[in-house]
Length: 50
Image (tube, rainbow, N blue to C red):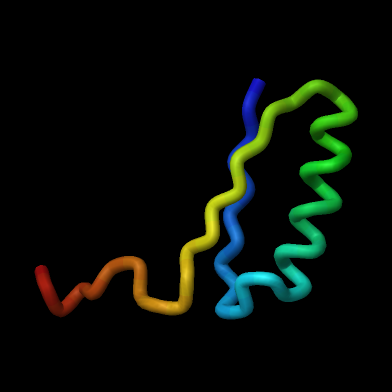
Protein backbone atom coordinates (compact mmCIF):
# COMPACT_ATOMS: atom_id res chain seq x y z
CA UNK A 1 0.00 0.00 0.00
CA UNK A 2 1.13 3.54 -0.69
CA UNK A 3 -0.26 6.82 0.66
CA UNK A 4 -0.07 10.24 -0.95
CA UNK A 5 0.08 13.16 1.48
CA UNK A 6 -0.73 16.56 -0.01
CA UNK A 7 0.59 19.80 1.48
CA UNK A 8 -1.50 22.70 0.23
CA UNK A 9 -0.11 25.26 2.64
CA UNK A 10 1.62 28.36 1.25
CA UNK A 11 4.38 27.71 3.83
CA UNK A 12 6.33 24.74 2.49
CA UNK A 13 8.00 23.81 5.79
CA UNK A 14 5.29 25.09 8.14
CA UNK A 15 2.84 23.44 10.50
CA UNK A 16 1.12 21.37 7.82
CA UNK A 17 4.47 19.91 6.78
CA UNK A 18 5.26 19.10 10.41
CA UNK A 19 1.92 17.36 10.88
CA UNK A 20 2.27 15.39 7.65
CA UNK A 21 5.77 14.32 8.68
CA UNK A 22 4.31 12.80 11.85
CA UNK A 23 1.75 10.95 9.71
CA UNK A 24 4.57 9.66 7.50
CA UNK A 25 6.44 8.30 10.53
CA UNK A 26 3.35 6.45 11.72
CA UNK A 27 2.59 5.02 8.29
CA UNK A 28 6.18 3.82 7.89
CA UNK A 29 5.90 1.98 11.23
CA UNK A 30 3.04 0.04 9.64
CA UNK A 31 5.07 -0.66 6.45
CA UNK A 32 3.05 1.75 4.33
CA UNK A 33 5.01 3.66 1.69
CA UNK A 34 4.40 7.39 1.36
CA UNK A 35 4.89 10.23 -1.09
CA UNK A 36 4.46 13.84 -0.05
CA UNK A 37 3.35 16.40 -2.62
CA UNK A 38 3.77 20.14 -2.07
CA UNK A 39 1.41 22.14 -4.26
CA UNK A 40 3.20 25.47 -3.91
CA UNK A 41 1.90 28.99 -3.64
CA UNK A 42 0.48 29.49 -7.10
CA UNK A 43 -2.95 28.53 -8.39
CA UNK A 44 -3.41 24.92 -9.39
CA UNK A 45 -5.78 25.78 -12.20
CA UNK A 46 -6.56 29.16 -13.65
CA UNK A 47 -10.19 28.91 -14.76
CA UNK A 48 -9.80 32.00 -16.94
CA UNK A 49 -7.88 29.78 -19.40
CA UNK A 50 -11.03 27.72 -20.12
